[in-house]
Length: 258
Image (cartoon, rainbow, N blue to C red):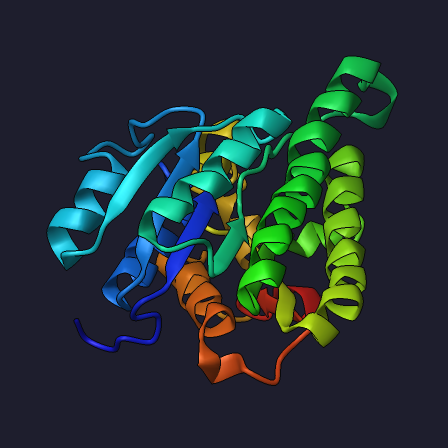
């Protein structure tokens, strides 16, 4: 164990089978945390062993998988409850989300409801169930995954931007409400991170438009899931003990230099 920042703690991470969530689970396990992997499928989109198996084998921690659609409150509650087997939830990472490009005039009510159900409702009630447990146990940390789309508007992503903006302000309000009781709540705003969401769901990385997007990023490269995971580890650990109600932007400088 390289740096046991989360030794003895248990983290519940939604959307942890793949992408940023998988990287976060690996970072947390390397730091000593037991992990609950909550996702709609166990198999990683990028291939390889399931996250719960991989982190347990690689880092010697306890880990389990819970089938969890974050828009289903029973599933969310079950994911948080699964942490009880490892001593109860200390860290909640609301990472699961849907990324979609769609012309505003073509968005249907079903499209709208699906994005808000996963990206906003899932974060809201994931935080609520975790907070209930944390308040009983003396505190904890909640990390919500927003996006640079929660900081700036972007054509073609009106619904997505609306959901991620909601997560940002929800995070601030939760920090105000829960902070006095020992629960810190912060948000991460990833930029263009190289996952299946940006290579397949909305082709940006590796597409014919890649160079255009790279020109908007001062670091001149796309981010990696491990870099989002490093930010999550900081916010989950005592290294950020006086950081509360904050947005940590992980975008290579894209947002503040355009």
